[in-house]
Length: 291
Ligand SMILES: Cc1cc2nc3c(=O)[nH]c(=O)nc-3n(C[C@H](O)[C@H](O)[C@H](O)COP(=O)(O)OP(=O)(O)OC[C@H]3O[C@@H](n4cnc5c(N)ncnc54)[C@H](O)[C@@H]3O)c2cc1C
Image 1 (cartoon, rainbow, N blue to C red):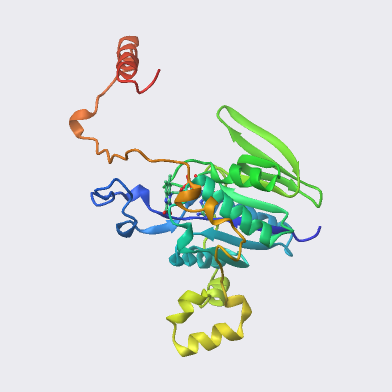
Image 2 (image 1 turned 180 degrees about the vertical axis):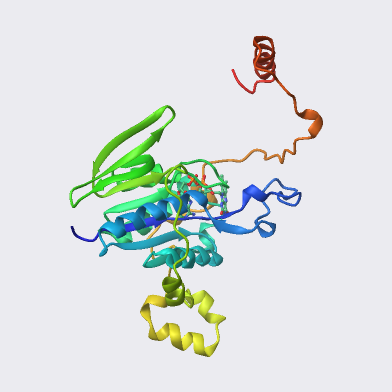
């Protein structure tokens, strides 16, 4: 079996599982500065799927592709510590304010520049935006097939990949020719931890932006070892149309965002009696939560 070229789409996200009172700004936007930045959880599941393919076919090359601010290079290093070979950071002030349409456009342009990939593997959704749109939109823009909600690799060979995907009431096994895009569900295998050898190898991996702040010794080290250079691509590098990026390329309009903190007095204990269930459904319909 040949080695595969796999690109893992990974996003650095604010840890929305630990939201405190300062998490929202007065204008209703997320206050990213006060939330710890983490590797989007399902993107770690995506990385593990790629690493399992590399286990089967050791010549496989795994590239982490992320779009974000300069500090998103942290998750590229994290991916390398766990077994990825290299990474590319798409970063440019002109991307600011991009919604899913503009984000998937930028990512698809970067994938066109990478070229000759066999698989693009993304998480199902990011915990900050929660839309699950970026993966499928990227596949559409590249005009390649997609397998969503992947849970397990069944098999892979030079012609096709076969995946078990999670459905609401069961599983489905599907095959696709390559190249194809896969989005991975949280029920897939957890990502393996950092590997000590990879950690030692990549701990000085840096982008050119980070290198500007580094010591002379670190600069010399990175400049002598090509594998320690994390590439940065800008709008010009990916040949993107500026009108399709940032706010001008983002048709989504966020009307209002509310930070809802549930009070103890708002909770309700229900039994499984028909009366309780019926009154609860009636209440949910009356306040338009359902129906
Ligand atoms: C008007 C508007 C303005 C916005 N401005 C900003 C902004 O300035 N800065 C900002 O950070 N967000 C901004 N956002 C949020 C941004 O649109 C989404 O976070 C982003 O498009 C990804 O969507 P999602 O989080 O729902 O990802 P999903 O579609 O849920 O993600 C699915 C998968 O796609 C991949 N993926 C998603 N995003 C990336 C990425 N950036 N890099 C690599 N892989 C990725 C991951 O594998 C992820 O698991 C804005 C949103 C709107 C509506």
